[in-house]
Amino acid sequence: METSNAVAALAALAQDNRLDVFRLLVQAGPEGMPAGRVAEKLDIAPNTLTFHFDRLRVAGLVTVRREGRSMIYAARYDSMNALLGYLTENCCQGRAEQCKPAAREKSRPIRRGEQMA
Amino acid sequence: METSNAVAALAALAQDNRLDVFRLLVQAGPEGMPAGRVAEKLDIAPNTLTFHFDRLRVAGLVTVRREGRSMIYAARYDSMNALLGYLTENCCQGRAEQCKPAAREKSRPIRRGEQMA
DNA sequence: TCCATATTTCAACGAATATTGAAATATAAT
DNA sequence: ATTATATTTCAATATTCGTTGAAATATGGA
Image (cartoon, rainbow over all chains, first blue to last red; front, side, top):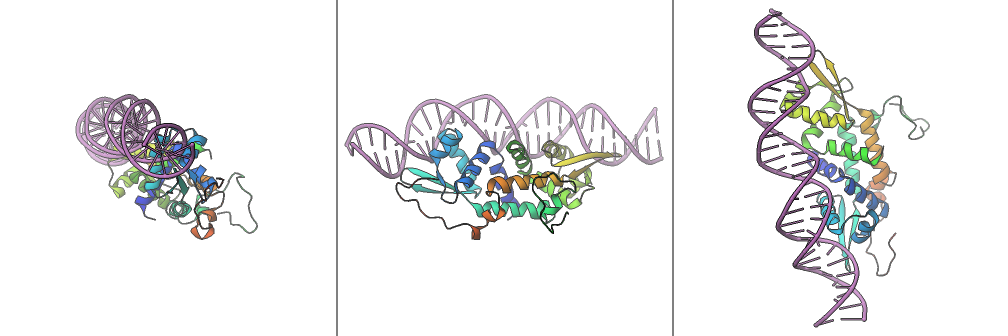
């Protein structure tokens, strides 16, 4: 992933409504969810939602397909993975461990044989 | 990390100059780099750079300290890690593998009358 | 066909953003 | 004390952003 794409993806996610939308679509799984149901669940006006879906779509983070009267949006897991890869590569000197401070909180258990950075 | 913090961090990185600044600081290591050197390396006006440093600092992504006449900015690896954690947790259903194309089941059209997740 | 449902398009608006130039501040050197 | 260096502050500006309401489009059902 190139830097310009990373900026686009970050910008797409850097808005509370859009981040909520994306998280909901991730939860919904690969089959996606109709726009109306997203609007309902997150209490966002349909036209506002169209605006945000568009941002996510242009940034490559979601796909759309029509199913009858509904437009079904789905998260693009591959794009999210590419973004995580970019951030790990460029903002952690290539290793996620680089980002972990020595005295890290107990956000997750430490597995056997794991390096402590 | 809470969603509002994630949005703040994403917004801080969602700008080409700022992403460049952060990447440079990550490369620079824990000791950081003086503002002037960042300005020089990235060819950004000093006052513009102050604006961007501020955004990164408020978002918790960098620290500053004075060293003589210089202000030395350094990347906060822990914050970056927290952001990566948030994204992995909330946008990949808890596993980075979820985001890899190979790991997800092939998407199929939804049949009429089929219930949505 | 006519009507209801689902979503998008469009114009408008205030708010936030990124950049610039000029002036201010803080520290160091002479 | 004066001058130079490093950075910030401030006001101004153009641009982009997020939301709203009204109207348009697309599909399905009676």
